[in-house]
Image 1: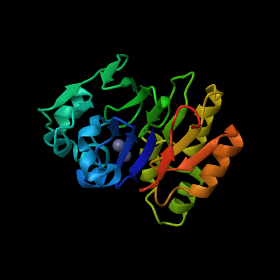
Image 2: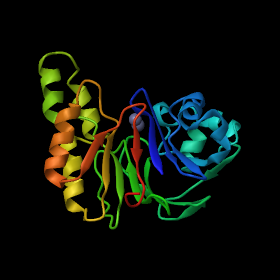
Image 3: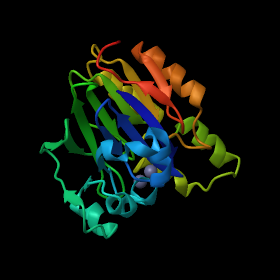
Length: 244
Ligand SMILES: [Zn+2]
Ligand SMILES: [Zn+2]
């Protein structure tokens, strides 16, 4: 199975877990055309569904387009209502499990400025993947995880520099503190969790002006000893359960 990054920023987020027989889309913040381009235009029938974290347009802006094209959309009731998605969708709840083709997904609550969830995604090809974004912290613990796809939005140091230089308004810091993941929190989260089965850590939703991709990767590698990526559009990563 491959992870294909269609987009990973405040401009639009979408990822595909692209398996041999079936694929799962995560987030609907990028036009469907780009998803088709990534998986091959004839392969749309392989897509068994799309799971969405929350209603902001960079994550759900194209959800109605996906549903209209026959992709079943799974999201919180609040997200479906906010985006007026009424067909080809399913309201899901934290703490329950849902089977989508050969994928089983378990939503869990995270902390953003609108209702937002992360997902544990299990499939025989990739094992166990944990995804969360747009949250200022993650207090959950996970075991046996093979791949992390998790937010590292900003560096507080970089943000403070930008505010001091007048490039950004001071109030932005208050908003980010209660809505997005600071790289130090991402690393603290990883250190709290057992990483013995982890093969890949993919950092997502990096801010354009308040992050430093190289430094984020270096810090995460130093803290975990794992293979670490910063997601960017077009990236393809092998997420098989074990090396082929
Ligand atoms: Zn976002
Ligand atoms: Zn958001």
